[in-house]
Image (cartoon, rainbow, N blue to C red; front, side):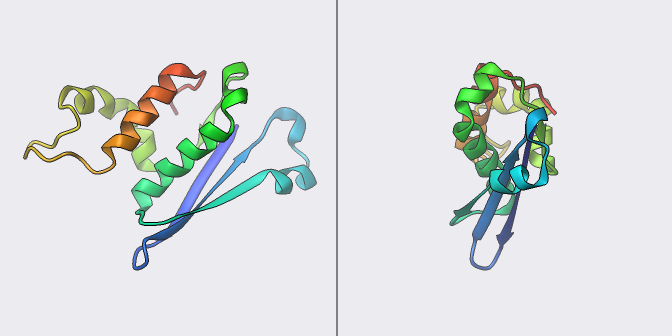
Length: 123
């Protein structure tokens, strides 16, 4: 299980992302505390930070993701909607109807590449 979350100060655009990877044999409180990872992100927004944090966690856990099924837990509506938005985003080549590249398009592309290659079900 992979738990991800983040928080951003919108004025400074500084945020902190946190993840916790848990397997059935690491459910003890002292072990859980040691496994919480936190990282500072600059020039970010809440939507961007949630995705940056998830991608960072998946990169950190790369060796595990190929061997084990990972279930991701997040409260990010953006991340949870990526499955249903994928076809439209890719068909439109990540452009809006007004002809502007959507924000965070590179992060979305990276997310889809990772999900394609790993044993990660959509949430």
